[in-house]
Image 1 (cartoon, rainbow, N blue to C red):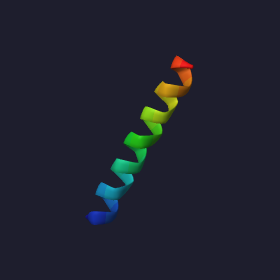
Image 2 (cartoon, one colour):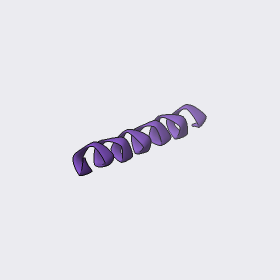
Image 3 (spheres, rainbow, N blue to C red):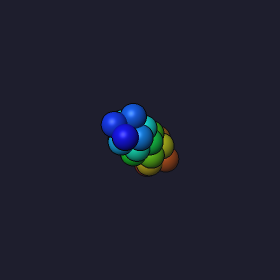
Image 4 (cartoon, helix red, strand yellow):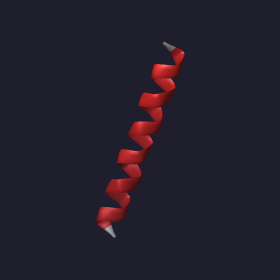
Length: 24
């Protein structure tokens, strides 16, 4: 279960990073 939550957090960070890259 923890691994699933960690994966979700990593995915969220990836999405934020992609949004920042698009803003640039």
